Amino acid sequence: MLVSRYSTRKWPVLDHAVRWGRSQCLLWLPYVLFFVPVTLRFFVLVVLEAVYNLYLFFFTLPQSLQPIISEGYSEGDAIVTGGTSGIGKEIARALILAGYHVHLPVRDMAKGRKVAEELGVKAVTLYQCNLSSIPEVLAFIAAFKSTHKQLELLVNGLESHMAIHVLGTFLLTTGLASILHGGRVVNVSSSVYYIVSHFDLRAFCDRSQFSRQGGYSNAKYAQTLLSMQLALDLREHDITVNCVHPGMVNTDIIRSDTLGKVVLRGIVNTIAPFIMLTPKQGALTPVWAALSSECDNVTGRFFSDLQEEPLSGKIFHDLEHGYGKALFVHCENLVKKASNR
Ligand SMILES: NC(=O)c1ccc[n+]([C@@H]2O[C@H](COP(=O)([O-])OP(=O)(O)OC[C@H]3O[C@@H](n4cnc5c(N)ncnc54)[C@H](OP(=O)(O)O)[C@@H]3O)[C@@H](O)[C@H]2O)c1
Image (cartoon, rainbow, N blue to C red; front, top):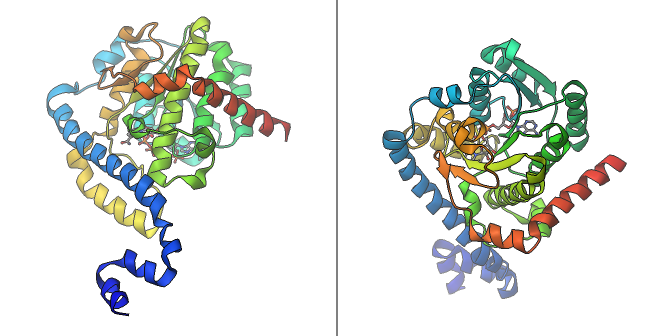
């Protein structure tokens, strides 16, 4: 009784122990052992990134995309996913300035039309496509290939919280590989993949096993691992595949309207302009990877702040031990299953 009253005020965990019994309290253990270190590492990374962003903002990043755009002029075709907002929209804008015709698969056509008007309707073709639906992505690939014999550039700037979005990257890259000869694939990943110390393919495919940011960092790890596997596989087809970290960018990345997310969005929106890059600045490295002659024939790399960032040792380890190939085969099987339905 004494313990219960004392703990209610000061020690909620102990209070749970009293109410649930000791065995139930052990349910906290996985949280303490797994999620707390992951959450802490995530926040340390965010703080370090914010400080680094200030340094980039004032000392390093060029203030304009213009030199990169002039260098990579082409009248070819580029597909940009995630082109209706944030970094993807700025990538699309820069590619149009560089002479490209930009193809945007979008899930919301009304939003797509607004963006096309903003970027210039003549330079944009819109396709209705929810990239989390395998049949819709396959239909988009078929429609694109029926009208185009060559694609110069594929930039995956899609928001990527779930395994299915990794699948989107897989589907588009493999599905378009036959017309991408001599072309580039740029996947917008995130340095957050560094915090993943244990990647379990089966758990990754089960969303319920991860917290949101755990899911995010795992999705980014999977996207990076898959990109490096694709880089190896597509080398003989003269297609380069690279990943980029855009920086910590002030976009509409917190979407949900749950109370917690609304509060978090409020906090982020207040401090974001002071510590985060603008979407235009976030587009610098992806556009550089897509257009710069410095990236000619360069494949299987990770770029950040207009330069190469060494891949984590874990990625090399997983590639060597066949986990990249296993992820590739897993994606392939999911597509086969969906196609046979
Ligand atoms: N912002 C950052 O600080 C940051 C840092 C590191 C990496 N990144 C990465 O950069 C990429 C772009 O992020 P962002 O910040 O620019 O995000 P964003 O502003 O939220 O844009 C995400 C884009 O993805 C599109 N999208 C999402 N689900 C889709 C679906 N099922 N079908 C079709 N389109 C879909 C959205 O379309 P709607 O407009 O229809 O919603 C939107 O155009 C992401 O891969 C993100 O992980 C961002």
